Amino acid sequence: EEGYNYMYIGLMRHGKAESFVTGQDDALRQLTERGRRDVTAMAALVRRWWPAGTTQIWTSPVLRARQTAEIMGRQVRPEAVQQQDALATGNLDGLYKSLAKYDDKASLLLIGHSPYLESWTEMLTGMKLDYKTGSLAFFSYDAYDGAYGKAKLLLYIHPAAAQMLLRQ
Image (spheres, rainbow, N blue to C red):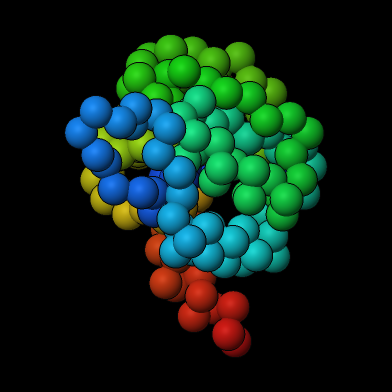
């Protein structure tokens, strides 16, 4: 909107990953075929309405999140993709500080994990939201307000809804 300094933030949980196996490095679990299909559908839908202008993707360095970021990036065409340890460790204050330095009027897609996405959503909006694998929430945020709890949830999409909407 003209005259407003809204930043758009998408928070997305990685797609469905291989089951955890004791003794295996959790950070190396890959997306399953279903996970890839769900994220591909989400990417195709998001491409239709993603805001124009500069976009960056920030992703957890964990493999399943990086794979999700790669699929999403083919559609939202980010200026840059950065790995952010905070998305894997849950250092929400560190992530918030990075966000505060980020250019307003830009769009960010952050790809991470549960329960950190839920914590951050509550911190940004005051709302509770349950992120299923491959789901995405999209917010407008006034970067100049500088207060927690001021983001507005614009939409939440589950991969099943993305597939339904793509059939329209």
